[in-house]
Image 1 (cartoon, rainbow, N blue to C red):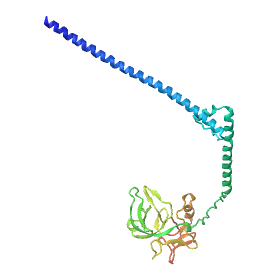
Image 2: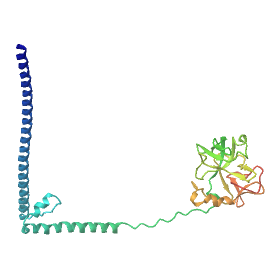
Image 3: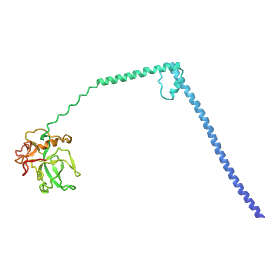
Image 4: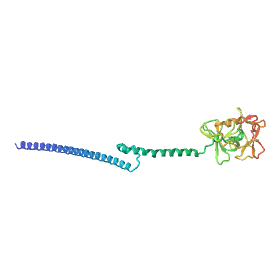
Length: 300
């Protein structure tokens, strides 16, 4: 009997705990709802106060504008909320404001236009630039110099080409690519002087930049390197008899200057390098530039 009573007491205690938990949950929910309602009420109150303050500010702005207009102060309408306030001013008050805008804007525009006009008049007219007079297209435009081949080797990507290291008296070594493998043995190319055309635009040949061109007597069957006179110094300029003038810093490939001069370059019957019959020389040397054995052949 006692165990039954004890069991009932435990059940009632458990039920009491559950009821207590439910009451606590309901109480928490009530508190949350109360807070939300309180916040909403506060928010509504603040919104009303804010609207009243905004209304009061707008009224004060209108009064300020009216007071300024009565005192003769000019009004410039701005594209903001203030513009709406000024529009609400009676027509008798706003009329002077609209009139007063005109004298402030028009003179400013007129001043700007006058200043622009004066600036245009003061600006001197630019005279068209005269085109730079170029010299005649002849061998004097070529920068041909005596160079010394310091070293040479076969091109890594082209069996018919040599890669030469050339001293032209500039304080640096130029790289020159030449298609001489089939015509000149490597041991006859290294450690010797030759004539080089130095003002062609550098161009890549199979991936390596060539900065000059070695001048040769050339036919389909045979090619020979043109020799400068004995006693020539590295960097000596080559010129043709009767053709004075300074060479171009770099021949313009678009104007095809080299292509126009090239047909006049020829090895004559005596093996001398010439331009339209005028022999190539180094200043101070009597002997001309010559091909070793070839005669009556083009130069390239």
